[in-house]
Image 1 (cartoon, rainbow, N blue to C red):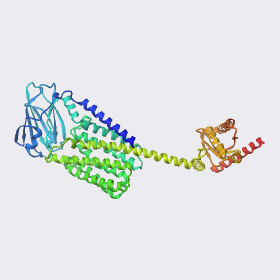
Image 2 (image 1 turned 45 degrees about the vertical axis):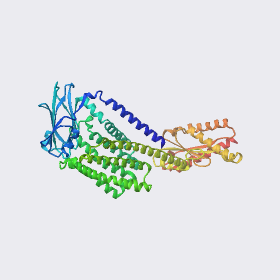
Image 3 (image 1 turned 180 degrees about the vertical axis):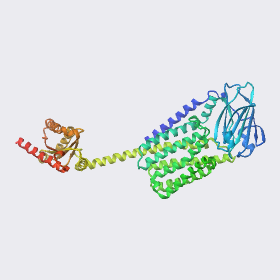
Image 4 (image 1 turned 90 degrees about the vertical axis):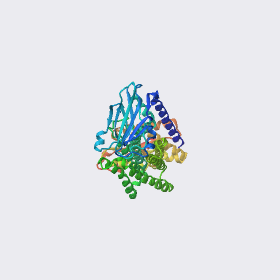
Length: 559
């Protein structure tokens, strides 16, 4: 476990190094290339004029969040565009159509048609090219709000060159950018690995759904911080992508937890999870049918997620964990998901504090969920590493037990049980085979005169000679005290005499190097094709008869 934690620590440090490198790579060379316009604005809100205000303080002046149908005009008469070669305005819009004027000229607009027809408008980071001017310019932004609570607090626009603004935007969202991209890439790769090992083992299926959850989280983070457009053209649908990715987290959490201890086989949990998973899909369907915009259903989704959090905490971490009903890897996964859920709860609390004007979200509340997701990833990696280690240990144990069950202890060859299983298997086919019966000469005399240790050495030496003679061709087993059998199939049957000759030669060489034991064997063989509709036992008996004839011949020669 210590090594695993060490390796994960190295991975975490590597991620930090990448973040630091990217942080300095995207850091603007000169902040003077980007000017943030927070002060000096004249704001008209539904006909009420607020002069020379800071946008960061506008919520306090207005006293409330915005409502559907509100018109907000932001005007700044002191914007210096002469410093920039290709001046560009960057500003956030939230559920709003907008128009931008530079002086008395229309510089850009977006979503006006959607505003007129009542279609859904999401949240975007907008870039508008402005005409270069040698004198102070007037910039006017008109926002036409289409949803309640679109603007709780206001982000200040910025001007600069387009590339500088893009770098500035990425730089300020660098942590989210790296975390989101990492989660998507890691999730896809981990899903491919888990899919390749998919089985009835709960831990493997649990990892597969966890990987999909990481992809959903990564997409959610990138879309929430308006970074998806860096990868693909969303055509104004970035906010819909954000909500869909977020809404997929709960069903994937249900599947991840459901694979733990096969909860999905429990009828009560199955009904519970189906109902909890249907809700997000229903909310998405309602949005695309035009009945209700997806951002208006966030509260319902949050209640649904809260039910899941309570279930995970009570059922998994309290009841089943205390009863030792879940494995270590399952517990690690559950703790990671509970940690992520707790971070989401904190984020939601600050979201509503901002929504009702109590305070603006602090950076911690915005970053706590991505941080929790990263720790969950490393928990999953530790979990998977633990599972793989345990699986290898179990496989080695099973292999060891199988070896003990089917291997001859003295020679390491297959034993009678393994031989019988092998013969039953090849007998089911119509293929030809050759059975070689091998019996040691003089084993009893060696046991009586030189002791059983020398007898065991005799048997062990013949076992080694058989391995060397047969090589990787055929099957060899020790079926009794001094009895061995070999099976040849396919083209190896043609080499039967060659193999027997190699065996006798090998035994002769052993006798020369160690004359304390005289090693020899009587051998006979028979083919399946010699008999019509014969079973394997009959083929073996014929090989055994020929072996005894060979034994008699050898005894005759020795006289």
